[in-house]
Structure formats: C-alpha cells, structure tokens
Image 1 (cartoon, rainbow, N blue to C red):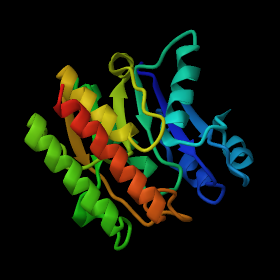
Image 2: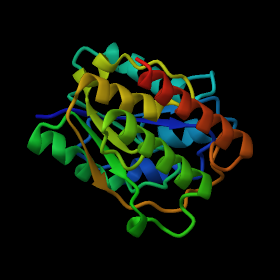
Image 3: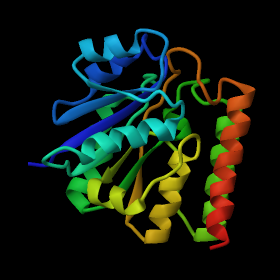
Image 4: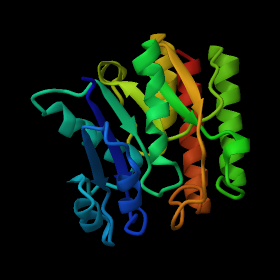
Length: 229
C-alpha cells in the first residue's frame, strides 16, 4: 500500500488549520503540521485535529518544509509520496487524490496543483501573485523549455525524488527551487487543475508589500542562478 505523508507549514493559522486537516483524505498515512513560530493557537488546534505537530522557530516557508522532511527522514519506514499543502484553507485538501493520481497511475515523479483562472474564486490570488506566477513560469519556459503554468504550493512528489533534489531554500524560494531542480534532474512532471478560494486570514507573502517584494526577488534569483549553470 502506498504511504503518503502531508507536510503543512503553518504560521498563525489557528482559524484555518483544523479545516485543512479535517478535509485531507483518509488515504494519507500521516499529517505533519510544522508550527513556524506562531503566536496564536495554531499548534493546539492542529494537535486537537489529529496532526503530528513539529516546532520550527526560524520563520520561513522553506525552514518549515525542511523541518518536516527532517522528521520524515528519522522514521523507520519512509513514505512513498510527500504532499505539500498550505495551512490557510485556500486550497481544497480533498483534492489531494487528484494531485497524487498521476504518480500512482502514470508513475509521474512530481505534480503541481495549478490554480487555473476558471477554478479560482474572485480575489483568491492578488495581482502581484498573478504577475509573479506569469513572470516566473514564462522565464522557466524561455530558459528551460518548461511547461509549468503555476508555482502552486499544493504539490506532490515521490519521496525518493524529493531527496534527490537536495532542497535548501529557507524562505520564499522553496516552490520555484523544487521546480527548477525537477527540470535540471529531468524528472517527469505534470500539472493538475485545482480549485482555489480566498484564504482565511491575511497572507504573509502576498498580503504585505515587503512579503511580495522579497518573494519576487527570491524567485527571480533562483531562476537566473539556474539559467547561468
């Protein structure tokens, strides 16, 4: 039987985290919430909802994801698939089955949930997000002949392939680093259209000018770094 683990980075997601955990399909072996130095009830609510909760005091999306991977590496039996999912309830966790289907049915290495326009709730993605996604995926297409249309955080990857990527970004560049390294390693990949709604609470990235600027700089720096290799 295929073992699936879910990693959810979470910073001040007390209002949404239980909803996310509740809607994840029962086919998942373990749900791992990484509390990224929250100052609300994120940790307590995640535990009450049945998740394994880890603490990562260093703020940063990548730091949280790496903490989850560190925990999984210490398990006696590793999972077959890792799914990354945000804790703000903007994605539909029940669509996890759609995300992992190409891996299970077609032996694809890496799958992204693409937040396509016709499945997005009005206002669910800000203009900086939409432009940033367009710019990043356009540059990846130009430099690497990539077929990505989104940097969506809802994604699944074979665990052994994830280890081969040797992920390192600690903050905003995590998603694009994974995609760039997938291209460099010539792993198979695909996208699955997913629904996307307005998140609960305020975004830590797109909801602030500082977050949007730093995310943009990090994403572009990864792309240009790999284009020069």
